Length: 378
Ligand code: GMT
Image 1 (cartoon, rainbow, N blue to C red):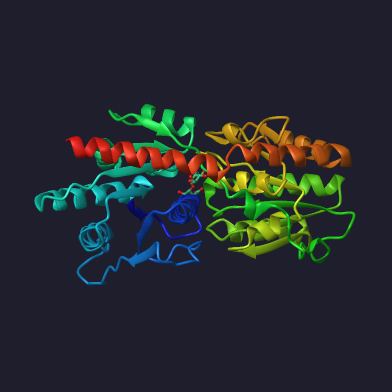
Image 2: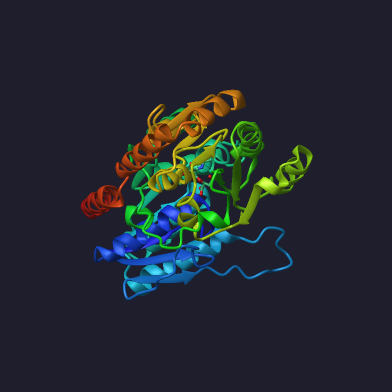
């Protein structure tokens, strides 16, 4: 199949999922066309089967806001015609599903039928999409998609609760390439990060308020009082300055290492003992899955889709949002006993195996085939 893939090219989970999906589909013989405003961060390999088309939005002084949807839908029309793209898979409803619908309508005028698959990722539904300013357009574009998927049961339920959606929503969980996280590094340089007696705690996110990064600091502060440890803080975002300030106030600056954005999280996770994800909402928690694939147990909140990924008492623990005391207790329970830590590490990896990309990616292929078949009949 010739598949157009529309996503955000940034470090966010939806862009990562779209990129990994496109790359795996290309290995399975499909021709993939990424259409977005920058080369996606994990798209290192451009091959015969993988193409990248940049959406340009020329600046014009009249515009207070540059019309990205317009530029994207025009680019989609052009690329579909030029490359014979058969189906479009858009990741994150805003504004991609809307732009895709506009492209579909333009192409229809020219006798081209372009089926659209929309994958809902989380904040496009729970935080941004349900805002009254966007809701009518998001509802419309979800209902106009030919197929809709959500990355967890929880996100499907949220969508049905928050929007008047008439479409069936298929749940296709996020996935992971386990080969990338098989700890075969010869350069897993733990000794450069921490002393032998120290435990390594990790947090990775876009450091937005929804990630509750202050809770990460509070839990780590409590842990390091009981067990010698270091915190690896990966990501950039609006909360970073507050976090740095808080570390100074708490006198733990020398115990927290800030990495910024990283394309090598597998290398950081390979020496981590525990992952913290105390988010306010999280449709899935891809970062937690990546940690688990690296044998890192997860102490997280119990919000949204996280309980579908992290199993309480097995791959880690779940606590109510904001319950720093409970998260601390759970972290200390895992870290305070070597044998127990080893068991949680092994369980984390076993749990991650359930999200193997070889199991999940074919589910998207079936959705594409069914959608194409349905659209041909119409
Ligand atoms: O977590 C973010 O804020 C980024 C966001 C995105 O769209 O990139 O992540 C969402 O999609 C990820 C991939 O499906 C999910 O793993 C995240 O849980 C989800 N984030 C939220 O729901 C807050």
